[in-house]
Image (cartoon, rainbow, N blue to C red; front, top):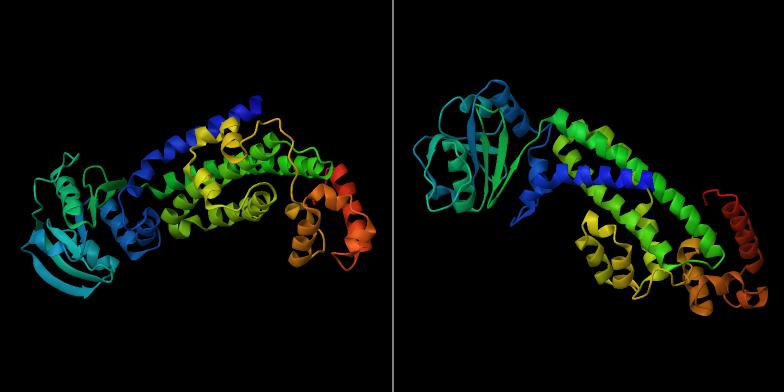
Length: 365
């Protein structure tokens, strides 16, 4: 119990650290991940932004769209291919730089942004006020580099996000990855327990809800790490590889558990997507919403997950479940009844016996 509480506290810390990164998801057409991909480590734009920060300069960059022509004036037309070096050099001037919508061209430099002052702003600096108002007015993306703070702020429509330094991102990603590893260890133990319970027809609603709770925690943490990885770009390759190793097979097991215990419905997916980390810890709520039963109620799986561990193909598994209705009836079916559904019942029964032995010994199956 102490270890479980400690793990939940670590998860809560990760979520708090990630809250500010959720801001950009509000009221957007481009997703946050789309934007982070365009400015991730390794891209020409991010290289230029980093160089501007390292040279203690500021910058104001507008990504053009159909509304952008109304918010800037003056400057001079560049209309040349985008390169990080060009952008870095043009940023030495005081005015704003206008990029093409596909980030492939530098259209204008040294322009003056004149957004409508009726648009609200939470910023105090002149450059950042102009950036926020411009993003809101054109319904697009504006990047502001602070000369004093050395920070890079992305404004997109009504949202803002401050880019994190690669070393800070890597630290957070590594810490979250360590917590994810612990979650996977707990998940593996729960799966071993569920194997034993299913083969002995002793599964309760609480057992299934506890496992689903852990799966959803892993999935949500994977989403958090994925945002770090995308912003890290090429610097996040090792983190990406490790995350894939840790989460391997999770989605498939989740699908099989849904098929075993819950009716096929988008509402189930939507229910879990709507849960915060805090609400995931409320097993009663999960049981009430998914099963309409108490946590102590015994339930019987259809058998998709356990049967997938045998040599039966999908059609044979479907036929067995249609004929016998649930896993317990299948496992206790005699050879004659099994022969009506599958071609080699003896082989199947032998596989089930080996499966039982492995499960009883606590081995992975």
